[in-house]
View 1: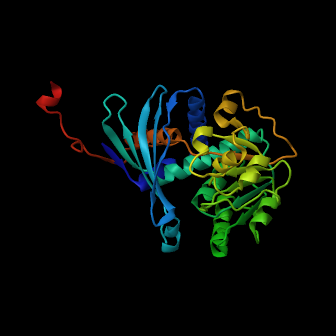
View 2 (view 1 turned 120 degrees about the vertical axis):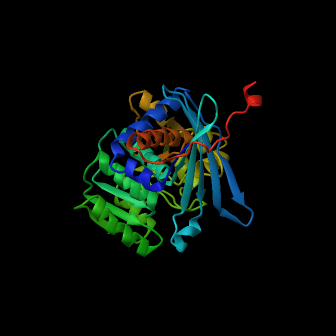
View 3 (view 1 turned 180 degrees about the vertical axis):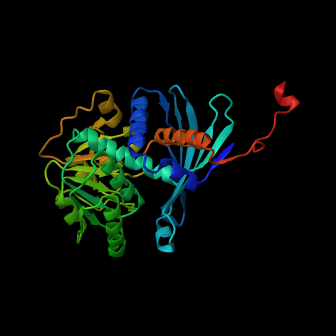
Length: 337
């Protein structure tokens, strides 16, 4: 068993945005080919509050270096007011030959980076590689900071970035970090969400809301929304948009905006394509210039497994992590018979 701390994960993944986008691309293609096993996530909720949850995401990836395991990730929005991260995660990797657990990896950064990598990949595919001058970020937390970092790896300079967060101090602090990530960018803090939605045509939404609260009336025609938190847009806005997802069966669950849209419309015909199918088809997708396009990724566990495998391999190569030889029980004579 190897145990890999957050500090080691951060060292391994820092500055490797382009590689991680390629890994996520690989995972999406495998998923579309049917070479993954991704059971539905299990949500542990608490009777006294619907905001807090802990989610188990098991997955198997069946490429040449098979990997299987589970991510156990919590979301406690109240942590932000306590000076703690909203999300914490641990990833366990198991042997695909014996089932024995082989690695325990701190997973919060892997989770954030795979989300941002999927957003950047979708933006590249759905925009045909032609990024606009302006980026809007709704929600000034860890996820959108990573989104900015990953989008900047694909487009080195963003002339303009507009931010919005309910917490003005949080938005101001985020603006200062933007100046470090993308020097020379003109950063504006919008007065409201509509101001951010209308400012440009590429928008990333990553908040902690539990119920839809945004429509797309303020968006410019042809805008692309990276709907990462899955519960911001009203079902009516989803039904009026062109929709691309990672997996319809996963994203239309747990009262996401798309799940509510399915309940409202009675079917899933509003889902136009999956990102894996687009990648395998060469990325061609005809966007309607008069409509808003929305990318809503549930966040498949297969992505976490591929990145966790990458971290484990790098940790062993670089001599990082704590190897524990006697973590698991040793075989007995009875077990061998």
